[in-house]
Length: 226
Image 1 (cartoon, one colour):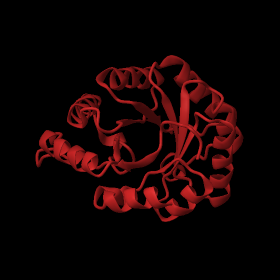
Image 2 (cartoon, one colour):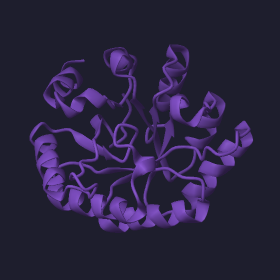
Image 3 (cartoon, one colour):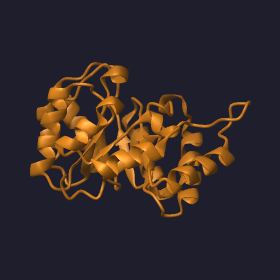
Image 4 (tube, one colour):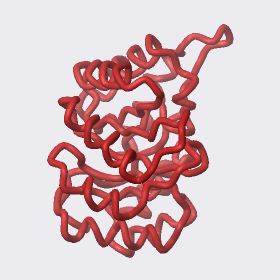
């Protein structure tokens, strides 16, 4: 494991809503307290949190209330999805201004991108936002895989701090963790719960298990003992 400050268990938090579809603020506060008590951080509006279904207004409210409930006890990771670049930059800046510690962005998904286009997308996003950016590689939802060579190039960017990897490819996992060994500020997070221990044994910085919504203490214990 390298020296990145981004490490540990990050749970892709569910997005709680009331029966009429509004963000359930009281539930947000309870869940964040539950996570903080177990020393795990949330990824707001990740895949488990159905980020593509959360409106801009609710996303901003979600980040605001989560940051307030966390009160500095844990880091807040804010998921970023979408196809309009200017709106993504705007949302990222709002999330950072509200107190999110890291922006975690998937690829835009309307068009299939070449590796060079993937690189340019993330580089430009990292250039345009003030908060730290983490790459989010998830073939299951974007239908694209970020090549290891592209990740290696992006790891050189001073505002790109890591990778949340849900690829489910053991060879790519090992190669990406190798990148962190030569990039001391770049973190690798495994988003494949079944391979959490394996990723940590290889030197990964953290894990992102969706079942951590139910048993965060189990994954924190795994992190502490691996």
